[in-house]
Image 1 (spheres, rainbow, N blue to C red):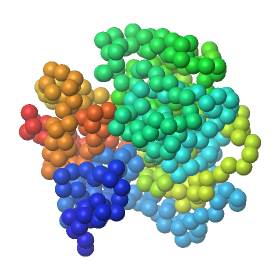
Image 2 (image 1 turned 135 degrees about the vertical axis):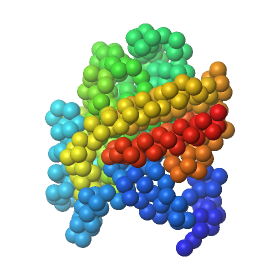
Image 3 (image 1 turned 60 degrees about the vertical axis):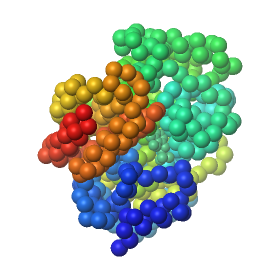
Image 4 (image 1 turned 120 degrees about the vertical axis):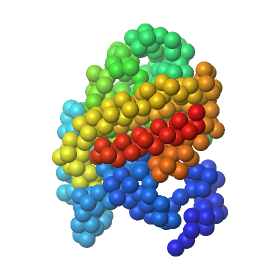
Length: 429
Ligand code: PMP
């Protein structure tokens, strides 16, 4: 078998330099089982990142594997030129779950393409190329998705056909309004939105796209009701609200099935990806029919919702619902927070622990300041790995540790991960 060192040499030789693997000594995951993975060198790790929140119901989940195996034995692909029961059944289920009235579902292969679709719909429906996004946002890697990404480390170009305004409020810790209480903060951001619209837009704006909890941005959580306050201003002007649920969907936040539900609103458009296929490429966009049907020419995605991805999606979603994994996310999230809050309180270099359900982050700074400490962040990542725990990194300055255990994680595994985190933090203090 090829060693990790040989694979790393090949990675550097054949892949673009903008890709980079985690760790001083990157690993190659050969197989997984539930919340655990095994690398090619035979090491076992507890997986608290799921390949960026994508393996959602465990590695090699038997229900998902069996559904894929069964569908693969029939046909992998037919396209939307033919009627496909797996795709239509899944669309019906997602339309129902979305909470959007008279919903239509368009399947794509990635979150990027789903958000691209949302922008196409909103700008066509509103006949405007002006869109709003939140500061510190990430929505994907395509030309359009990059235009609405407000995150210097992930913004590869400023060229765009869209006119984009960036709204305050995604990231309270570093906001100019950070010193206000939640209500004051929300109010200040809503008033700033009014000014942004009055002063910097021309004519009608198409939409505001937002992640209810910013993923790449470091799991930043706005106050409950925050997007409700913004949406009031949007509604006054007919501006659509697009909820990017790529990381926050399917019960991940514990309290709700969708991130938007913490804000007392229903979005006009919702996008999803990542976890719903448990690793198989499945994503999409949900919108009211009057918005979806704005596109009155032919428009299709070759692979979007193909029978294989739809079978994986149906099995994953079925597993989430049958086992009430939203409730598990809530319970395990509370257990996680209870165990680690005191550790963080005693650690001056963790500026903030934030999150919800099974999405938690530690923002790492030099003690007593908000000056990002990337070195210590890297040390936490390495320390966890040495303890047999895989965690993620992110945040505007690359100084946030992100934790997203599987939605079906059991107490014993969660507690093991907590122990590794606790001792890693203590060792580095
Ligand atoms: N939206 C959000 C919130 C994301 O986190 C991501 C991926 N990290 C995307 C969109 C893009 O999804 P994909 O990588 O599947 O294109």
